[in-house]
Image 1 (cartoon, rainbow, N blue to C red):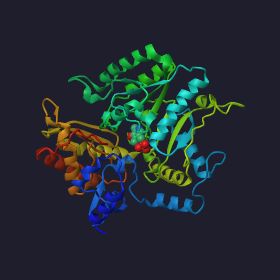
Image 2 (cartoon, helix red, strand yellow):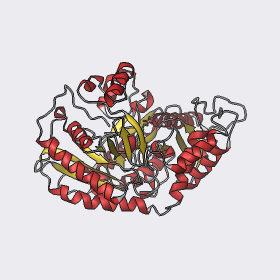
Image 3 (cartoon, protein in one colour):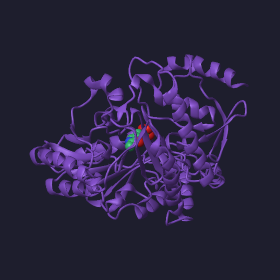
Image 4 (cartoon, helix red, strand yellow):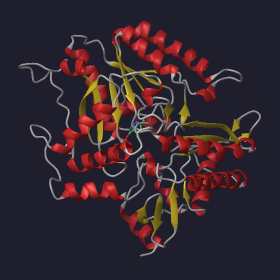
Length: 461
Ligand SMILES: *Cc1c(COP(=O)(O)O)cnc(C)c1O
């Protein structure tokens, strides 16, 4: 089988996620035959470094022997069982471990099978909790501009990426949206912290006026991933926690992208030393092996559903594959790998190596807003550096970076004009330096090439 043959078979029957399928008339699809560590290999033996951890999930590289072994063992014991009325050891063990790792007070785990579903669970649980308390007027949520919380209808209603949500507006409940603390929006001379405080004032004003109808504020702690790795100061989370307590509103931390040490701490909330009322996890939970998500919450919220005879007061949400034992084993094996480096030294080293490797890009004529949080680094492409005038989205410079990097054996997937690297933790220092060098080369090529047209801009994560 050649890449070409695979691609033809694929394009005859598949419909790919987050894709205008017509693009594949001129952009070749990359069929992957196998993967090992940071390397993906296509059907013609060409290898690519997976510098985005396969959509941010694959933290320990592909086919990690320890995780493979754990899944194989589980496979011969118990592959799946209904989780309502039944239980099993891997899911109990995983819940125990997550509770121990999470900010103190998050003592209950509700499992689902993808990130969007976890967000739906958190939204429904929050509203249902207030409902059970007799606060039936609480039906609204608050999210940040540029937020991304998934693409099912509930999650999409608190997502602020027009490319994903605009078309479906008639199906989406109206919620509140407040300015993002993203520091790249700070005027010249303003610190990230000052901007965070300023933007928070708008949110606080909203809570003062509307808290009686607001269930929860939902945020992506520290990094708004799909908006283009927008980063912000942790003081925003501290102020938000205090305000939520003051005004009787829940705080939902969507750590689906940033959990599991991405930010240099095990959970991003730890940077602000706060405990959310709901913590949503998925993506890296199973190290990119199997779909699984979980919402952690407090005993107080759990108790709000506990009732001697009212079924309706219980949380009746369910998914067929909730708590799958194979996925739980993968997650446990991943946590065992974390336990080998409890100080997260590898993640700090990744941060250092990227910091150094980004230095030379500071002077690049088309690069601005170089930024880093933990193991994630990003920068934006601009047409003019002094005025930070962006390239027109329609020119698809990001797509050109993707193509140029792929040529050089590195998988990058810019979001609009934002190039980022989100490496598996097993990537070596030299490999990381190589990835950032290729990113720089790819930017050179993409910013010099003629523009490629598209009717609307693309900003696909
Ligand atoms: C990816 C993501 C989601 C959605 O998760 P899926 O598993 O893709 O449904 C939600 N929130 C954030 C912050 C994400 O990055």
